Image (cartoon, rainbow, N blue to C red):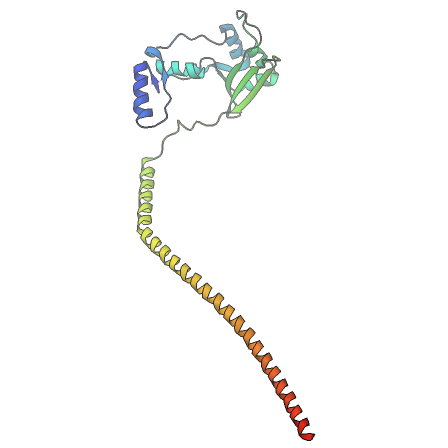
Length: 246
């Protein structure tokens, strides 16, 4: 948002950020005035960039906006210092002389060292952002190039009919969930009861297996005792027979 005085800033911040809790960026342009623009390059240098390197002009010259908006873009995004070009820019980059030209200070600029630059250009139906930055230590120029993706915020909004249709689908889905919820809760209770019953049955099954194992052991002991008894009775009978014979 762009405002023209501190009072508007405070009002907008209070109503949007504090009361509604919505993050907001606010730029103040005093009295909404557009200041005189100081160009990055001299007219002579800009003529060379247009004639020999394929540039059209500065970024702020490619669109129109109310003075407060334009000043906000200049203050925050330096649209008055970024230049824009077409297909010929790539050829100038391939020749290796463009970056040297942009990095060289103007004759009236008494500062030392190279200067940074930023420009946009098109190549093979794609748009690119190219920047150059001199190193603080070596003075060597570092460059980077990034493809500019299609704007998203400026695309048409969602079709109201589609939005209404989606809202209806969401409403019906919520109603279905509310109708199913009691049955789901009832089913959960029943499943918990069966789980408890299953645990009880599991304990009974373990007890049955234990009793069966003990019964098998007792049965084996009983069989052993019967065999010993039979052997003892047989031995006793033999002793009786020997006594009769004597």
